[in-house]
Length: 368
Image (cartoon, rainbow, N blue to C red; front, side, top):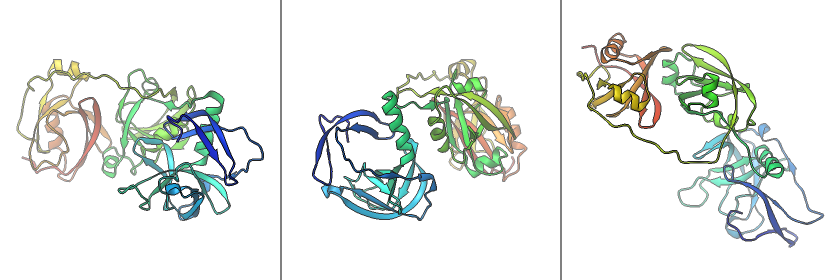
């Protein structure tokens, strides 16, 4: 750990010690590059993490709880894992015994090649519980190259908020199977906006790389150099479309100020519909405050409702079998619901505060 350190010492197995200088550090991937003045240093060979197979044996070396040069072994449990707040690293998951003091140590394959850097564990006790995560060495080498050349790491961004495509969502959008990243919202003026990406699009591939899970997209976009022109494929209203986008640079984390539009009494309230909710039409003032052209506000939710919505949510769009319908009036919405089969699967685009999400609902009440 180099953050906040006043002095960094590097110790070798032959008892030599050197003071190190920090060349650069990247908080997002937890990687730092340090330099020492020395000769005749031992070196390791680097392997290819993409060739690792689940079930393959791997070995870690570290100093758990201060016990230096400890070797532990296990297998690769999974690849390409995303962890909370760590969506730029496709972690290698192993069941190698890793404990405090192992972080920063190498992960070797059976050919003696370094394939990863042990980074963190999942634990409820603070000790090893069978879940260890390592940064793939190719990711680490790319970070060190940028830190050495520029002193910082550049990452791409396109300006979208996304969510996972579930089986029910795929059915609603008419997609063959659950895949891709569903776009909840597009930042105004962002590369995505300029490229023509729309909320309700499902991004299927980016820069010729398939997006099987929503967690794939941040990694792919993040590893794309800012300023690059990239091709992407989206699923929109029952068909695929190809778009071109110029990737921007991800800036340092910042907190955006937000305002909450004032609430007024919803208009045109009606009895609960086939979703078990009561909706009303937005006033002109509410639409202006929310920055939407239409939408219906949820004013009540029955206890037996299957809809995962709350009072105050704004319903913007309904998707059924790939057909997208913007919701404008209570009468229109209830008419759409009345024409559906009891076992229909629909998806609603829901605005809640400053965020937007897609909610899937399976099954409706009998027609009244």
